[in-house]
Structures are given as structure tokens and as C-alpha cells.
Image 1 (tube, rainbow, N blue to C red):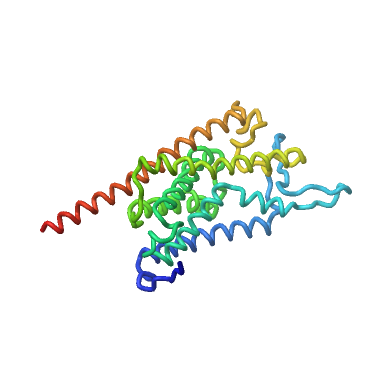
Image 2: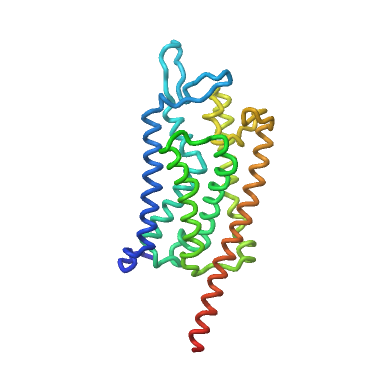
Length: 277
């Protein structure tokens, strides 16, 4: 099926909002990535003795020449769940901006796919604001803007649009969603976990610092104190995070489906009343 951009809806407020969100998310990620890649020599972390250590730099055999692992940085940057899920919603916003009237015809912006993406970005928002923000406070105003945009504003806009503005054409009943689709929502997080742990083990075996091996502290399964000063093993943190994420995905995806179904029911009642009058 060949799709054409619907020019009649291209300039309505929904399309403009979606295109604006696409641009904002894309610019923020691109700016952050390029800035860190260019200034990789300034990226540091605190060693156990309190000294600042180059995050991506190490000395070559002569002990004098420092090499910066830019390839490793690039892979690490795009290994963050935050970046991956924000790229998802950026693409979702872009497609929705161009094909706003074809929600029932394009899978990516269909209710089922939109619920899945909204659920994933909800995981990003909730995990960051409950588990990561307390231990990684943004450094300055720009960093605050970036973190708030990717972990709060963009997720909330996407979720609210899905629940209250997206055409619920084709949304399936909650019980059917639970039976046929809920288990599929766990495929991506499980794959993400497996790849992250394998990559982490490889880098750890190569002697790289844990900050460049695992994207999040709760994946540092070898650390006795994944959070310095908190006597909880990394493996325990992983279990806590896994349970949290399992509950979030099930609860929110079913809740989102219920809300969209309620909109369909209300629309049917309204149509019946109008026809009766």
C-alpha cells in the first residue's frame, strides 16, 4: 500500500505538535552526542580514591600517549535505554505528524504499537526519576533541560497524546491484549538486558571501568556496592529493577489499553444519543 502525506491535516495543531516534539528530541540527542564526542577528553569519573579519571582514555604501551576510545563511547551512548526509547518516540512523532489521519493504516502509529511505545517511555521516565535522578543530579542548567526533556516532558507529551488524542481506531479489548500482546512487550527489555550484560562482561574482562561497561548501576552485577555507600549488591539491584519494570509494563500497558477502550465506548454512546435525537 502506497501512503501519501495528507496535506489536509499536515498543518493542524496535532501535526505541528508532533513535528515540534520530533525536532526537540532529535536536536537534544544530536547536540548531546556530538558535544560529548568532541569533548571526550573532558569526560571523567570519580575513582574509589576520589581522584578524577578519564572515562574513555587510557595510556598506550609507552605510558605517555593517551588514546580515547571513541568507538566504545558511541556504542555506550546508544546503549542507554533512555536514548533508545526517545529515538522510538521521535520516530513515532515524525510519522504521526505526516500521517495523522492514517492511524489505523500504519502499524507504528496504531493503538497497539503506540501503547507499546508509551509503555517503554514510561519505564524510562519512572526508572530515571525514582532510581537514577537521586544519585545522578544534573550538573548545570543545560543538563537539567536535557534530562527533564528526555525523562519527563517528552514522555508525558507522548503518553498524554496516545491516551487522549490518538484516534483509537482498531484498539483491541483489554483481555485480548493481555493474552495476545502483553508477553510481546517483554521481548525488547529482555533482549536489552541480555545484550547489556554480555557487553558489560566483555568490557569488564578487558579491564575497562564499570562506568563504561554497564549503562546503569543496577546492571553492575559484580559490584558489592553498585551505589557507593549503599550496602546492596548489584545483583540485588538488578532483581529490584527487574520486578519494578515487569510491574510497570503489565500495569501501564493494560491501563493504557483500558483508557483507549473507554474512549471508544464513550464515542459509541455519544453517537447513539445523537442519532436518537
